[in-house]
Length: 353
Image (cartoon, rainbow, N blue to C red; front, top):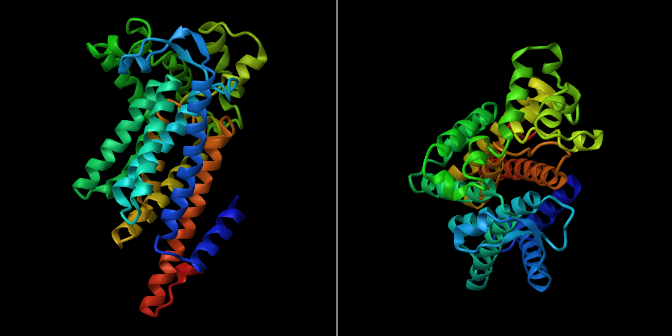
C-alpha cells in the first residue's frame, strides 16, 4: 500500500495536469467509494432483502419498513458499509466546497455520489453514522466560513474522553422530546447509548484501578484479555460462547480500544500522529493548498465516529487501510509541498532529510 501511494504520487507529480495531485488522489477515493455504494444500492433494488426488525433511520424520511440487508454483503455488519457511505458523503461534499477546478460533469457526478452515500447510510440504519455525517460537514462548513479550520487540530483531545462525552450527550437527549423520534424502543436505547453504557462502565472501572499493563495494553481484543467480557457480555447480553465473546469484545469507542489494545503509550503515539497530520494539513491550507482539505474532513469524520464505534485495530480492516493510506499520503504531500517551497526560495531545510 505505501509503495502504491508512493508510485502514484511520483507518476502524477511527473505528469501533472491542470488539477493538483491531492485532488486527483481524493477523486480516486471518491470514485471507488461511489462505485461501491451505487452497486450496493442497485443490488438492493434488484433483489430487496429485509431483516425482521423495524428500521429507524428510514423513518426519518417517512419510510416505515423493516431494516435493510445489503444483498452483496449480507454477512458484514451494516454499520461497516454505512460508514463507507458516510465517507463518500463527506468527501463529495467537501470536494464540492473546496476544490473549484472541475467540469460540470464532475460536479453532477459528485452530487450523485453524495446522494448515494447518504442513501447507503440510511440503509445501514445507523443513527450515529447519519448524525455524524451531517455534524462533520455542517461543522466544518461553518468553521470554513469564519476561517477557523485551524481549530480542527484541537479535536483530537476529545478522543480520551469521548466515551464520557458520548454518554453525557445520550443522557441529555433521552430527557428531551427528541428521544422518542429517534429511538427504537421508547427512549431506553438512547439513555444507554444502545447498551454502550454497560461497556463503558466496565472499561472505566478497569482503568480506574491502574495496573502497569495499562501502559502497554493487552494486545488485540484487549477488553477480552482484560476480562471485561465477563461483565458486559455474559451478565448483560447473555452471550456465552468464547467466539461470541471474542467477536463482541470491542469497546465501541476508539479511545478506549486504543488504551486496551496498546495502552496509554499507544494512545499518546496515536494522538501525536493525529496532531501531526492536522498541523501539516493546516500549514498546506494556509499556504494556498486548499485541495488537501477534504482529507481533513475525512479524518475529522473518523474521529467523530470513533466516539461510539471502534475505528482502530483489525476489527474492521477497511478502516485501518483507509486511515494509514491517508496518513502516508498526507506525509508525502506535505514533504513535497516543503520541497517545492524551498526550491522556490532556493534554500535548503533539514526537514527534507
